[in-house]
Image (tube, rainbow, N blue to C red):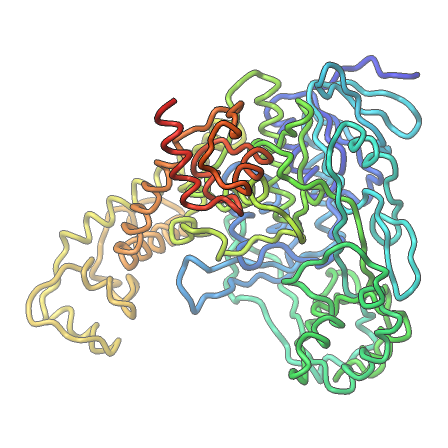
Length: 627
């Protein structure tokens, strides 16, 4: 048996979005790190949609950026269209989304990895782990060579026994054009891990030269795009448009005609797919009353004519895919460059993990990304980052880094994974965050940059800029409380905005609480020292935005803070790891089984387990007090 003489601190298996962030975090924290990937040329590959962000996902990317991750900077460099979604609604649900140059993004992330000190990249297939005395201490690659380390992070994506379906044709693959990984699932099951199957899918790609874009509705990006990274000064590259078209009754008729050869409807696929992103055939069957569904043609990059057909995920046979697409307005002569397909793959239910993403069964072994049952580049990236950080802290014998539900969407994601049962690919939504008013995408830097700085992942210069921003927001709000306007100065502004006039002097802060009044309406009247200083324009704009949000939503924020205080009381009531739930007679049988299975760390976590009722929590609380 061959083995290397080098001993690594951290080994990462998988070069997707989780693996990249894990490797960069580990290496940047000073660990000798090696990343194994099946193909160096497909590092950070966007297997499905060439886009980053979206509803709630944009929050994750900005939080990752505040902590010192790379994804936000990469999309800022390689984005081809930027949009702030939900801008007509409240700031809690504003979310950034950007189309990416698929190849450019992959190259950009590879460049970051190759330029990172302490980090090696090796193209090889890992098919087993090395365990001694209950601790993971290395991996074995397909040639039989062993690599030893102090912690291992598995980020295998959809490659574990991956099986692609196109109509009734199936073949092993991790994604189209790449091999599946055999052996690693079986090796982990040997150590007592539970493995299940999930399914996801991707739409066809279309040759842009074969479609008539003039028949479609053009969709442009924002005229003044907001960057993902707080450290990006401005998006300077030109943006590219996307195009909207619709399916029709003819499209649906063609799809229905192919269902007898659909792996989804013939029972050939056994894995469960995501409800929130159904295939086109599922949409046609489940919503028969709808005569049409939206389709978006999104460019694959600046240097290609290929388009991604968003909204048409499918595993239908090739002839049905082609006919259905050609029935759509503007695509009468469309040529498919890559067929849509479904893929089934192994995952490991994340109830087998600690909040650090370390496995409960084997010490020093971490899971991150789709191996945990999640879906999406953003969910994978933040898991990879958190696993990378916690692997380093474990190697150093330092306390773990855990974000709670009240601190970040990242905390919501990980807590949901380790606490709730995963039956389908997990996707982040704003509705899953109880404290979303406080966890906005615009204040991710104010919430989390200090943590990134303490971990050594955020530059000192930027950390002090965030401190200046926080102090300036507080100072500015205090000034606006003191600044009062007389009716003769305020009323012309209020009348222009169709807002009720005043009869006596009122503070500008009070006037700003009106929904249709903004700071810009008082240009020339408000003269705060911060705006006559040398602070760059981007920071001034961010300060104004924070001030206005804080003022307008002050009452809502106070109520949410009170909810957080109550939440933290339960989170701070810890449950001993070796708690014997069989001793607690008053627990329901279902609660006892679930508590024994998940072994929550606190009463707060226990209260979020399906099958554990408020009555069970009350029983637990009394038992802990007696102890």
